Amino acid sequence: MKDKNQSIKFIVATMVLLGIVAVFIYLYYSKIGPSSEGDKKITIQVIVPDEEVKEHIIKTDATTLREALEEKGLIKGNGEGINFYITEVDGRVADSSNEEWWSITKDGEFSEYGVGSINIQDKDKYELTLMVGW
Image (cartoon, rainbow, N blue to C red):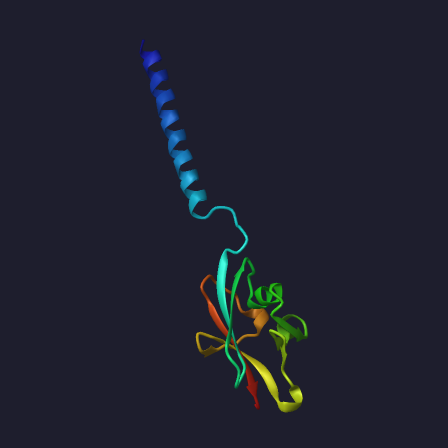
């Protein structure tokens, strides 16, 4: 009789434990879930002097700003890796003969890094501004 009670207690304890594990697994996957397209949403403003500011909302899984911008066809440039620099944004080419270049700011603060080194997070806001002169 004692062995039967112990067996029942063991079975009940095992079922309770499995139930708790199932609840934790459910909560874990319902919070983070598998990655889906567009996990990050960033805002890009394209600012050209004497023109209306253009705003682009990008939904992406990209890690860097360069990846996100290239996915959407918003930038073109020269160089590789950390030596990549933007020459064109949203169809507007910077004219090097007029000393034009593209500046990257985040919430108004100049970036110390190149576009390929900037890691993005959900709800980030960047400005790509056409600058004239050095």
